[in-house]
Length: 265
Image 1: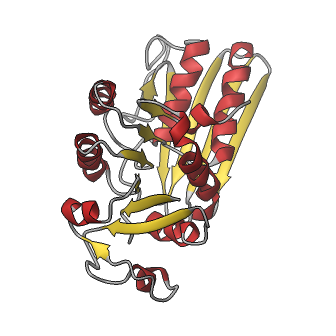
Image 2: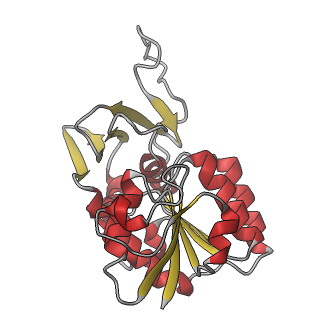
């Protein structure tokens, strides 16, 4: 049985995912870390009755529970600290938090190479989103240009989303559409109206109440367009990917990025 501690257990993702983890027979949630509700039974937060596991406020408290694996749904800053802590303590960690800088990611990769534990960064746990990225990579070579529109709830702190960045990276491995953000004939009457620019792909971020997590990849060529879209309308859409990551992390080694590392196409 794998013993798990959830970081950010009182947040929306933490609550949704931990409630499902408690139902699994081959997993035991032994701890939860957060800045709020410290000392409160986790079951009270989840609305499932007493679990006998209270919310911890420090890493030292988590160590007392001797977890085999950490699942992190916090903020970029907090997740970065937790990844370094996990490496220091030779503990495996799966991170669903986005917004971590590329510099930090490269640092984690280098640190893990000298360690025996695993760091698995997953910008999107939705299997549908991973399928979208795979399809986008498959059709890239048939089109002349591509742009991404990603839409999230208004409480999301980072933009663009980690999923859109990874999508652009995957596309650029097949074809580099643009060398510069603006073409020679283009001007912006309002600065930034053409969106962000990454790896030859324009990315446009929408943040509005009512959205959860959505992405469109729009391809264009002479006389036609192709739009591939994925929508997550409930946080439970991420759970199949979370449990897949948990049950497959032992098959990985070192540092890994993206759920596609454990999905066969």
